[in-house]
Image 1 (cartoon, rainbow, N blue to C red):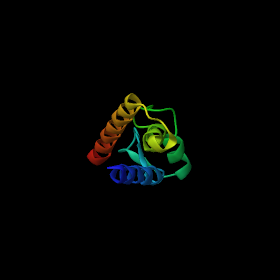
Image 2 (cartoon, rainbow, N blue to C red):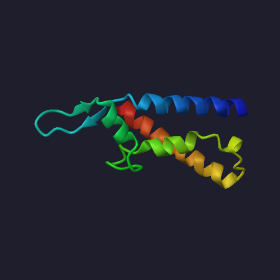
Image 3 (cartoon, one colour):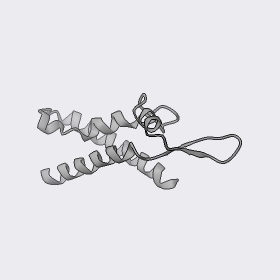
Length: 101
């Protein structure tokens, strides 16, 4: 079970790295939505204040918080682990959002 947890952490860590390369939509009044492909702007969007821009921006901090190996760091609180699991469930909502595009 510990190995499976580390594997999931690694997958989420890879997702963090990949997300820095994924374009995001920018509404355009004149034409259909456009995609922002500038790595600097993507990073600013991803690392902005958590859950801003209608829930589309700021996911980096939640992603980072959920991928840290808190049990290795030394946090033993069961309540804290449950909160982290809830945060991971929020990430699943984001994945569903991405798949719907």
